[in-house]
Image 1 (cartoon, rainbow, N blue to C red):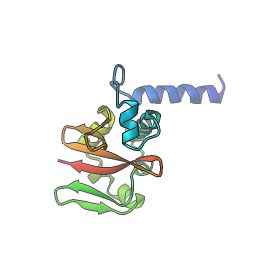
Image 2: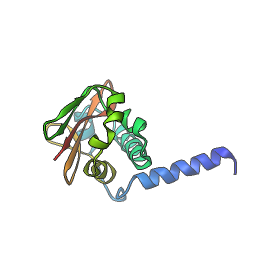
Image 3: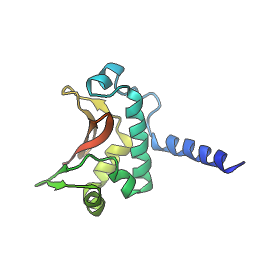
Length: 142
């Protein structure tokens, strides 16, 4: 096999591994995605794949690229992360086991306020749409 074929097979494997529990998962409807500001639910699916791939790989830069800045991290007293460099520096404080688990295992849904969320045991991740791009807008660590 050539290099492109290996790369394609590796990508398929990563996507498959990045989507635990997706079989049978429905996710938000087209109208829910539209109400949350997305043109289609495909963008949400692609975002989740990118997020899970980066988290699984422990790629701090790739994870940090998926956040909206500045972002307030709600952890006890809370603190503001002004940019990607600050998130990478505080990665272990922000990306707790509860946050990683929520990102890796919980399916996104659109709540009654039209916010896309991933909620796990001890963490909430709220997604936001900025200029048509989906990003992490809030992290709550309980």
